[in-house]
Length: 478
Image 1 (cartoon, rainbow, N blue to C red):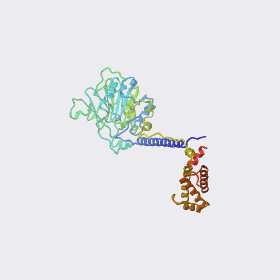
Image 2: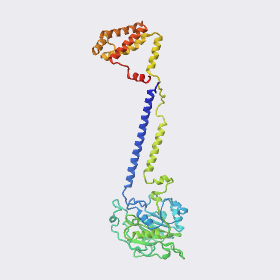
Image 3: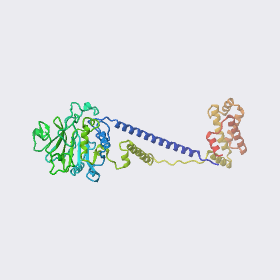
């Protein structure tokens, strides 16, 4: 029975090795991508907080974050949520249950004009907007009648300030008392701001000079209560019988600078606190900062929504992507997909000239030998048969003797006899008869068989067998 051709098996083995190499390369590339993304993600997580680039998100547990404030409200029974939708949905059905909307710090994603317009429309309908920032977005500070709100920096944070170091954050700052008893300052005796609080200046267009930025209704530079009735200050539960005053109401001041005020906008109110440190993880535990923070967001009742959309935690359209938000899984998946597409694309393209398909020779060399032997027998060309066998025998004898192929046969026979048990005269005679048969061509079939048999006996006695390839092919075709 004839077995599978060894050349075809060799090609299959080569193809398998190539595919194995490609698979190993892809797995190695994926492992490298996972390592790079993981290192990048861990580096991002270990980034130190800074007042120059704070993270005021309720997800952040560092000193500049507000996670402690959010968790405390949640565990205390307040209805709180993280608003991760665009603010344009706030006036719609999604924001129907929201009564207080809180924006803390300078957001990662800027607030667009259309978004600010939607938030203010929601406030006009009775919502409560709480802005806690040293310089809140001016688009969210609309004029109140003739009053204009302009926050101003007093001192910029330096590079060497550690937000976790309370001594650095509150250096040369004294706790401040409420200016007047209001709903926002209920049960608040002392508030501890940082030294980076801003001044919330407000004025009317008619004021000029130094009075332009001085808080209204002040005596000797100290703010006093606004003439606004208490029922119109901060309580949305009250039902005023007269129109609310548009003048801002000051609640906290420090060093002749307004730290906390609120003012009406439509049927709602806008509360502005100029220092995020008061509600941040690093400062909320000082003095009565926690009580003040609770008063800012809880007086309206209903759901308290913290803006996380502009903090970079907006809801993704894909639920799978939203689940892995903040992890390197999305980046790794995208890179793996790109790598797979690259492999598929390269496998379908030709990078060189077209080559013919490999032709598998299903015949062995012994079949060729048998065919030539039959032709020579029919043509009675026995001298050619002797020539084919003798040429190989002389070549291996010359290699065995260590001499050149064209050396005299007597010399070859003598050198072979010296290295073996063969007789030099008999070997030389056999070589001479073979050469005479080849040159004269006058040889019978019987004589040719005799000479070939003698030549094979010489090869066998010297251990000069067939080539390994011929031996394998002979064994496979038996």
